[in-house]
Amino acid sequence: MRFCPRCGSLMVVRRAGDQPYWVCPSCGYSELPSEPQNATIVEKIRHSEKERIIVVNRAEELQTLPRTSAQCPKCGYGEAYYWLMQTRRADEPPTRFFKCVRCGHVWREYD
Image 1 (cartoon, one colour):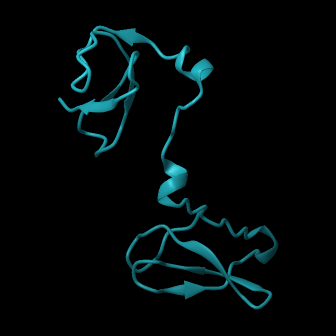
Image 2 (tube, one colour):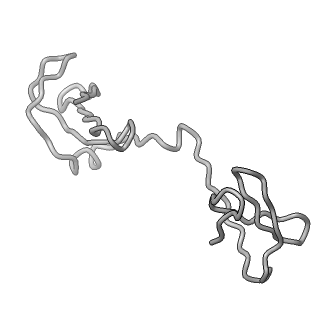
């Protein structure tokens, strides 16, 4: 790990041809590493929006979810599977998702 001497941001390793170098993503400052053999390039994994969504379709997966008493807005049945997911910022409460045991309708509740 290396910090930029100009602005103090965390620098990342980039490669120009076969030569690795340190670069600051904030101010653009760059320098050659003192030990190039120890410089490692780490690539970010980018996920598509579809890959971020978790879909539970199989009946055996539904059986592992907890159940609660919640009235389905579609059919009025009083029992649903539920799970929590952080859909907004970390300082806000998670979103509660429900799936009706009878009709399979999915809805959400926010705090």
